[in-house]
Amino acid sequence: MKQYTHYPEKIANDYVIYTILLGLLALAGFYKNGFGYYLDNQLTFWESLKPLCLALSGLISGSLVDIILKHRLSKNCLFGFLISICLPYQTSILMAFLLIFIGLLVISKFNITICPLFVIELILIFLAQGNYNNIIESKMPMFYKTIDIFLGRSIGGVGSTNICLLIICLIILSTRFYYKKEIPFITIGVYALLTVLVAISNKDGDLFIKLLNSTVFFVAIFYLPFNDFSPLRYSSQIIYSIVSGFLLFVGAYFWHPIIGPFIGGFMANLVFYLKEILSKKKKFIASE
Image (cartoon, rainbow, N blue to C red; front, side):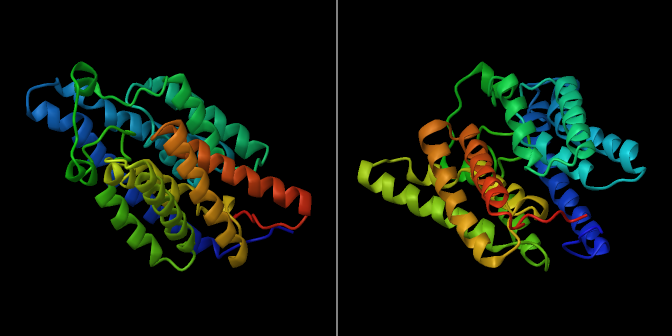
């Protein structure tokens, strides 16, 4: 008998809200990485479209997976969007489309429950050599102030640099009954605490820039709390969040400020997935 975490109708409504919020982030990334430069006559119109096309490539490929396997739109279109919106600007649109399509098709076909978002994301990031610079950023050195980072002007994923919008997304998602809001708040809190402590001990002058790491916010808000891949029990969610905050900090501080949080998030998810297998007590229950 199939086991449900929540009512399917409410899950579908949540998917729509997720998609709308990601659409807003994609538009912000499109303006920051492309259309804004087109208005300043620094890019051609077709060059300016790349960030939007790259962000939408995952949405389209995931939708095809849903249509092929389920004959209707379901969670794969959302998964694809979540992956493509964080990709480095230099990622090939065709490569992103194909790898997301193949990855989600395999994962859905064989019902792989370890979070596919991190796996496919990291593969594409490394294939793109982690090059997050857009065309203009690649041509000249760019220096961003704290306010620039807050408003989404910093270097990062195609549509995942705008912390102001990410905070709005978190507020909206927190109103949803089934959104595990404790996970992003605790994760970001642990990350911030560790960042402050290390910055103070090292007399680091870039404290606020490191605190406003948009990739950490994105992973904590969209990836870690997702119902299919996070603990069901409240006590487990608390531990999961603390572990996630620590691993996101380690990844961002000691590995790479953009790639590191994805590695840290994947490790946190993997630790709890293995814990579930070893304990034989299911805490990750698929939503459908």
